[in-house]
Length: 373
Image (cartoon, rainbow, N blue to C red; front, side):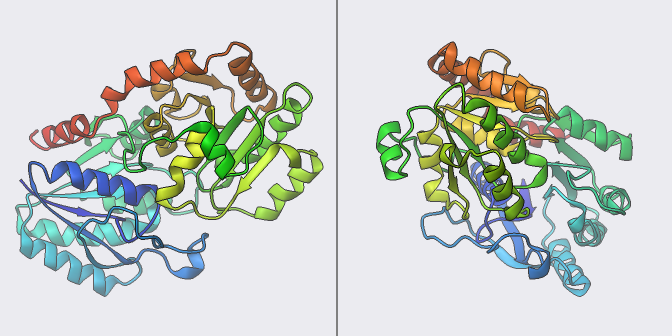
């Protein structure tokens, strides 16, 4: 099959770019695949981070045409005509927010005029975490042109069928992020990161309001009188940094937190996961999370709030714990239980048993099968 992937990929950074790189590496084993990505993903004034591109040389590079401008309709027309002329059997989009719907929607309308190319969207979200007026209208504009949908949680499936009840779709698990290298010795990496505490939990990823770092900080205040525990926070602020610093000071938990709040390069992700005993996702809202599949790659248990699709991939009492959202006490109780019952090794063994269901081969095989319907 001749396939075009149009989405964020190298040299752009972040989890979606990593996902698409791994998707390409799996599909290329059996198909003719080319990748088209953004020369401008966001205007600088809309981007909350410090840089939109990978800055280090160790990230795996994939071949791509860097040609899409997210805010230029004339560019969308020319990209659409290029793909229309190339006549792929399938074009795959990765979709996570309505900002890209006008761009993807126009391109897809132009491409489908060749009467050959089918389109498939892999949906991280249908309705975004941080909602804005017009989200649903924009999403409908794009989705009305799409033939197939791959969804990675029941909550996303529900959102899709609300917008497009007749959608041809398949629910698949998010595959493991296997591009961050092997785990390293815990004690060795703790020295590297200057982490002195014997017990450590990890909050990883871009810091946004819905991810609930404030809830974890409040839980830290509960934990400090019950156990000596380190909280590793590794990820760049995409939210107001000062409000978190003020909360840390208010709760007097400065000595419990290890803050690594610059962007974490791909080749350094392994250090933060290897240093931790368990990964904590105190999300206030979620559909699914790629952080789960980074944790699985490093064979780490997870303590998460029971929101969105997290409960579909975290097995309560086997690979981690699920707790009520927006509840620092429940989160603290689960962390205490994890250590008091000495669950780390048992949970690690259970995580290993789950890995096969999250393979890239299973994901791509099911994706291709969907397009035959």
